[in-house]
Length: 300
Image (cartoon, rainbow, N blue to C red; front, top):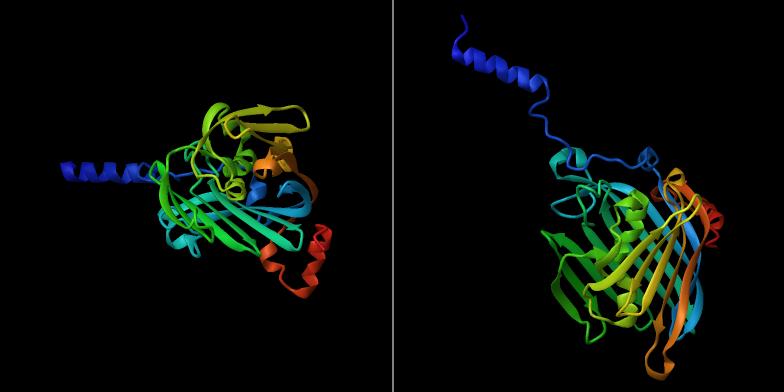
């Protein structure tokens, strides 16, 4: 006859064998397997960028890639297998824009880190943005902390200077690119509180605070449009993207806003149109022979 202890122990083993104590993944992935083949999607774009009341021609590059991200440190994990409980599967976008104003160039980069299972982790964990031009440079970083974002900003402008503050919960315009690629049906529509794009805020030197925005998604068989309108800013942005079959690929965008101040203020249209897309492990393509890929993207 089994003792109470043996009965308990037998039940314990049965529960373990059935996976009762197995910890479920924090973010089971639902996006296409194509994102997990050890390659990144690299797309080049022709851009028309409004700056100082005029339209400037330039190039943009979007690099989408999945990574194992640290929930605690909010950085890419070097050895994720050593810290499985800290791993968050994210989709990262590195978004570059390059154009020239007169004699001097602008180089912009925004990085967005968004959990791939956005329905259960409904907020990007981190966004960074930097702008370099001959007058100086700025760097801005948002880190998800609880329900808010911690903001750090370094800038050569006096009124921006060294900034350390918190941003109230809201959608982030910069994360819309990732949300489209993960699942555009997860994007809330209608009136929403949204933090405008980091580069727009740096161009205009506006305070980094959420604004009321109206979001609309229009879908058809071949091309979809995500529209954002900020009534207070009188700013519209439209993002054009494909269907689920091509992973909701970004085809281009259009942005309408007032550029400049006073008598120099003009309403201009910035835009981007895709040139080419490659799927490659770009971090390995660093020899002189690999400049061939830049030619394929028409960046040379």
